Length: 136
Image (cartoon, rainbow, N blue to C red; front, side, top):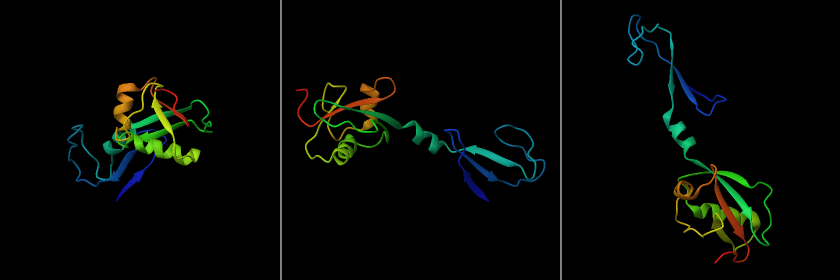
């Protein structure tokens, strides 16, 4: 009987009840197993997906309205277009100018993780947004 349990820690553990014959040894620890022992295995896919989340800090520039919540987590495999679409929905505007670190406007096809790896500061990707052109 396999079952997934979520714990309070960022690493989620998968606990399964594996019955083994008495006297058999575990390949990882080389210790004898008991017949009704619970084997604890880490789900590495969950750890990898948690590691690829990127914190995006959205900052209003110029006459743009300020969002109530300015920090969000997004999957690193998502394209920057998802951030732009999110801002358009939140601000109810079609025309929007979006910049990274008040410096440049990235291509919407760029991956968020690539932008974070190259231009992230203090563990987050700073994204400035404006309703009119702010930087050339």
